[in-house]
Image (cartoon, rainbow, N blue to C red; front, side, top):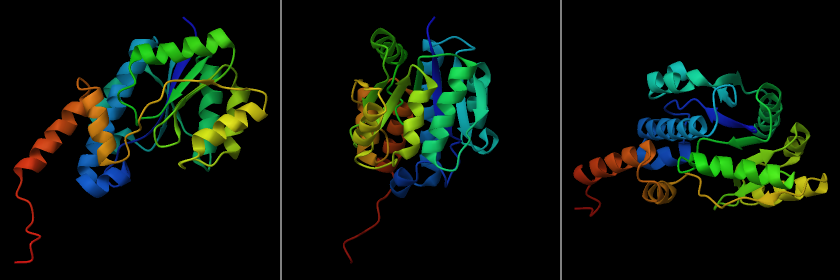
Length: 233
């Protein structure tokens, strides 16, 4: 068994999780959807790697999260470590460092925004990194990236200088890796769940996930509830 999986996650607490999606569906629904996406991601990681090769780098408290009991059960087979760093980029660097130390590389790092990323996909990008001896960067539709596989923790240090959550984050990350002597192999393109249209696309692409089931339930409730009269009458 080569490598390990690293999930960078925020405890899905209402009002703090999926704030862009919450603007459309409400803070509690957004937190529940975030929890479902995290559960799907933990399932995929557990199917791809055995205990001892799974690291969950967490910020926030699962006790305060939506679907708290389910999340705590799902995390039992993981090495749970706190995220460390002032910025998200610094926390990513530290997450890779901890995963390489605790579980070994290549380290397949994902977030909690791609519940459609199944176990075979996670193992596939790890194999790609191993075969090429280089990092793998999987682009996201919004211009960021959804997965980074590092074969050595030093590769992740370039992230500290890359601005995150921008439309050019993927391009800048690839350029930083190349400039440091680690030209990345391109991984598959996926869509992060940030907005309603993303949720609809991901739920359609991966209909058997917890996220998709919950999204369909939410959509059915919205369709059944009376809509406000915007006619002005």
